[in-house]
Amino acid sequence: MTGFCAIKASRLLATAFVVTLISAFGMLMESAVAQSSVRPPENATTSEIAPAGNDVPGGVLGTSSDAEIWRNVRQGISGSVSIPDDKAGMLVQAHGETWRELRNGPLFDYLGLAILATLILLALFFAIRGRIRVEHGMSGTTITRFSTLERMAHWLMAVAFIILGLTGLNLSFGKELVMPIIGKDAFGPMTAFLKMIHNYVSFAFMLGLAIAFVTWVLHNIPNRHDLLWLAKGGGLFTKGSHPPSRKFNAGQKIIFWTVMIGGLSLSVSGWALMFPFEYSFFEGTVRMFAGAGIDLPALVGMDEPPYTIIQEQQYNTIWHAIVAVIMICIILAHVYIGSVGMEGAFDAMGSGEVDLNWAKEHHNLWVEEVQNAETGGKAAQPAE
Image 1 (cartoon, rainbow, N blue to C red):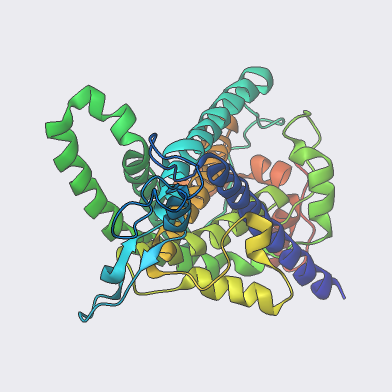
Image 2: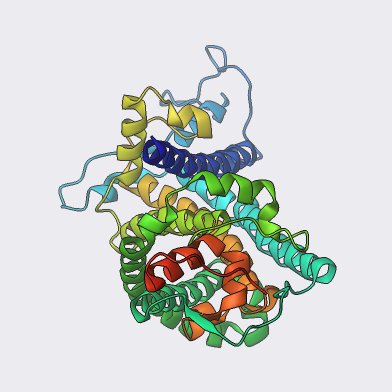
């Protein structure tokens, strides 16, 4: 029964994360559509067709309104071509304006503000709470927290994500923030090189993601102790109130599932961007939700399928950016806690050995399991 509840809680956690991403995607799409429109030229008129006798020779509209023509153009114009490249038949790609308005407007405004807000909140938290100390002091005795394989998976994934994050932020914000400083002549070659780095390093990230999932998934299944941990805020806000926890606490489990689900989504959308016009992941996703009775386009303000291959790429760029920034914000909090925010935390992924008192304060149930296994079932001693 406990295992069933844990699996159900895990699914609820994953569903909540996906719903959050879809909601963010929908808000940005609605904002872009509200700002986007193809407008007729300033000299367009709205008069009725000229009465008989005033028609322009040849039967053309003459003085009649051409606003309706532009409304039709807004819906897109495509034809057929005899070459293998089907997208060459798209004379007017109507959704390009919506995508451009979103990309250059609310998308990067909101995502940039999200990163800035995360940094400000972490700075305020550190100023108010300070560094979380080991309350009983360091014991001088260590316990093995993570094996070499676990640390290898973590650092492979972490270093790759940092490189991907920096190079991706340059692709998104570099034109506005970096190019004015170093100039166009330097920015162009630098960005081309960083884009190549971004593509190749992504494979290292995916490898680290797979190893970490296989290594840690069983330890990250939610259990009843996680509810107490969340209720007490993990002891992060109040001194002397560390709730019981096994190898991973509820906060770490949230980060784990965020990275796994978000990393998988980044990998899929990134793959489609590296090999453009080959996949229809968005249309497949929409049809999958439709099969479950969920009208995803209506929820997020997207068009109904089928989608053109160009639309697929436009949706991929938007989704890739949203998921990446959400993960950056969460990882920034993770880096803070694992370094300056908590005494003794970095040792877990540094040497793999942590102080025994630190382990007992933050992961007491795990310490008991390890010591019981080592001592043949004898109970672990409390922290002193």
